[in-house]
Image 1 (cartoon, rainbow, N blue to C red):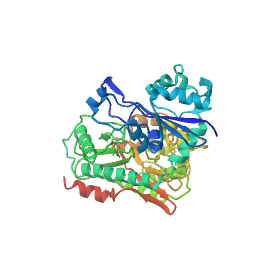
Image 2 (tube, helix red, strand yellow):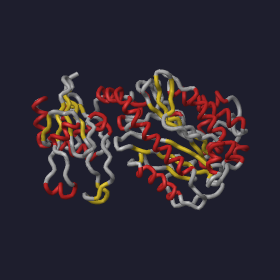
Image 3 (tube, rainbow, N blue to C red):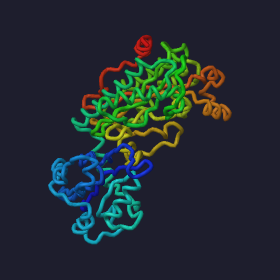
Image 4 (tube, rainbow, N blue to C red):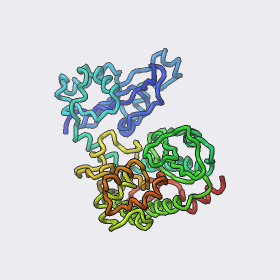
Length: 450
């Protein structure tokens, strides 16, 4: 394979005017291959010999007034292990020196660029390369994308250490809230406590915190609602290290000191699904089968509660359980909390396997075989979504597997989810991070101390 790979750092992204920006977050492919956590840089990598050139501009005197002293371009290149460096204005000439006259037709043939999530980055690169607007929307190099996926999905030891640090701080975030949240707090107070724990450890958040009593809304973010005795609080939050590596955990617990009888039954089942699913992890097993294991355990448990009926295996094959579990059992984790999702979820999680069209199963982000070096989450949930229940009941959907009459007594139970991060090794799976007991007994014991 011949050609040049072009990698681009992110720029600061303005909120409402140029000098007021969102917190800077570097492009993950740039972090992986170049490692410099600074904006406005480009790198060219020659595929044949690996020769790399860094393109960036020196800071001006005006910049230094606002930023203080910074490393020179030569020092930044040296820190990244790159021996060649040039100002940004030299990028187009360097490409043409290697490839000849650059035309749009040669992009993703001779000049390979990974998918870029920010439109402003594409426009910036088009300007630097002298290309017409939208030139970088023209196709993608599948060979480059699958090469990046093959490298990034298998974590090196130093990456695993970083992820484990992120998980350790994520556990601290969750355990701290479990031990402190009291009735009367607002959901935003709870989220602020979680963010404080991350930031005092020098971290940011790996995604927008979900801190809610409405756990049946899968991505219900923070509100000013007050925490009510008798409700279930769901926290889905993770830390992101300065290196970019992420943790992702979910915990569910009573706002008061104990679960109600129905909540206790559901949480006991949820924990059993978590334990049963993780017990079945092994190298080479397809993650789709891991999802089916979790789905079967859930369906069997709901049958024992009288909510479902019939054969649990048949119910799962038909997708009846998805009324209560409409998302996938997990996803890969790394420099992105949904690792490499910007390269295409199907490419990353499925490879050559087709994605199901069945409700629930089609939301599975990872389906291919788990191999040593992969890090992923396991996150079963149980949800009672009134609008979805009403729709399925009106259509008599899967009524041979769902007892809609008995379901009515449970429809106000909301939603709960638990999540852990796992590494697959040659010897088998390993839960990442310190021990964080999510058993019903441990959760209620923690809550009795509030």
